[in-house]
Length: 224
Image 1: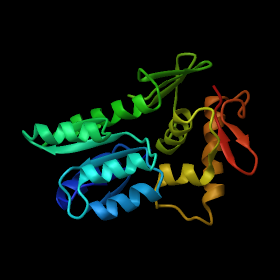
Image 2: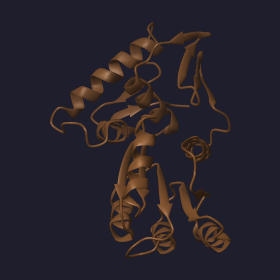
Image 3: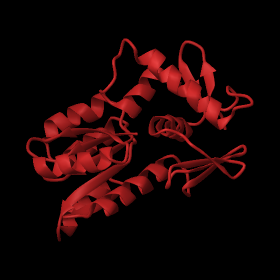
């Protein structure tokens, strides 16, 4: 999952980035409203973490522009303690939730998980797919009750495809969401294919292509 953090307090922004990356999210950071808006409109993000008070364009105006352009990713607003008017303005502008600074990392992670589940229309942390049971809270996958040992990258690919069921996802989109900028574009296709091949063998050894399907020349698909 790819997230964008727009926060002008550089130390806080980098702390949030580190916290999220430790949870296997891919994270981009912007330190002012203008660059944050440019990134939000030019990249495909699953969630936006947005401070209200920013240099350049402020957080509320940034959010209003993003929504007017048709972007529907969840937005978590960061507000100063006690500024109720900021919370109201943020929610009215299209924010999905808010978090008051200072905040504890576990609360931030819980809010993010909640928003991402809401976005994918998954009402609990448990997803059933045939004989597979996927717990997005613990990041465990079981087949007929037995735990399947997936690597972090294999799970990240599987979860990304699950969140986008019935949509064909390109290899490039998978690479950007799972590895961020840490991949070689020229070797990317084979790199993703190898991970998907290993994932298939683990989740459906009897029929590897039955769950994660290949759309030739485009990418991969998990159907309902």
